[in-house]
Every structure is written in C-alpha cells, then in structure tokens.
Image 1: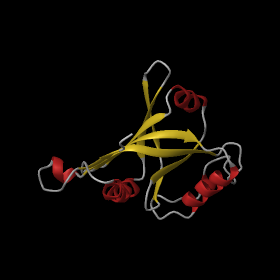
Image 2 (image 1 turned 135 degrees about the vertical axis):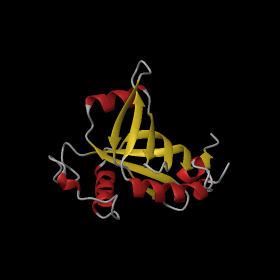
Image 3 (image 1 turned 90 degrees about the vertical axis):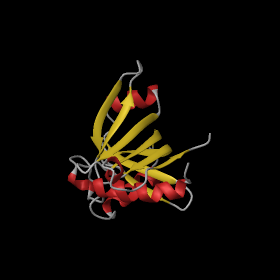
Image 4 (image 1 turned 180 degrees about the vertical axis):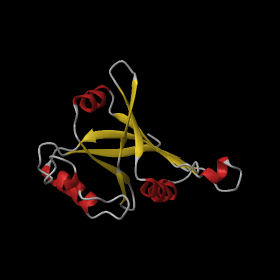
Length: 161
C-alpha cells in the first residue's frame, strides 16, 4: 500500500483533469443512489480534502444522515479512473463556505468556475449554496494504460483506522 501523499497528488491531477465524477451514497435502507457532481480537491502537505459546492437537497441530506459516506468515481473514455471513498459532512459555518466558494471561484481550469453561474448562488451566504467536505479513507488511481496493458501503475491508499 502506498503513502497518502504518493497517491493523493496523482489523484488530484487525474480528478482535476476529468472534473465531473459520479457520487454514490446510500439511503436508510442501504439502496445506492448516484449523481454527477464537481468536487475540487486540495492537498495541504498532510491531508487530502475534497469540497463540493451543491444544493443540500432533501435526498442528499437524508442519505448523509443515514450514512455519512460516499464514493466519488471519475472516468474517461481512455479508461483512466480514480476513486475516493470518503466520509462526508455538511460544512455550514460562514468561514468554510467562504473558503470553498473561493476555491471554486479561483481554482485552476478546468475545475475552477464562478459559482454565480448556478441560479440562486449570488455569494457564499446565499441560502441555496451548500458545501460538502470530503475526507477520503481510501483512494485508487487506475490509469487506462494499465487496463489496456500498455504500462503504468495502479496506486492505492487506505487509512489505517
């Protein structure tokens, strides 16, 4: 198993090139539900954190109340894939919402964007603007070249707790 840093940096590179991922959560009966979302990831030298700017729909709230875990799966037609299995929590405080807003607004292309393009999101304190904080407990970076037997290496990391 690799170190977090040795997987987190290639994970961010691949995820930020792909941009959109399938997020899966489960309801109170354990039934999965998937949606397409746009996380942004940051590495602080010791920890990887994902941020999702989203609407806190009743379904999303209920799923995370039932199980605070989700899976973020990125894929390209060349079969590059990376997955982050995460603990997720709503970040409601003004400071964190402002920070997440800034990450998206000033993030590098193609992952950065102006959150104001979403109807109802005029600023970080807009009622419809919500933030999910993702803390991965498992990462996998799987280049399509491995699947196609053209070389490369699958990188994985899993928390020990």
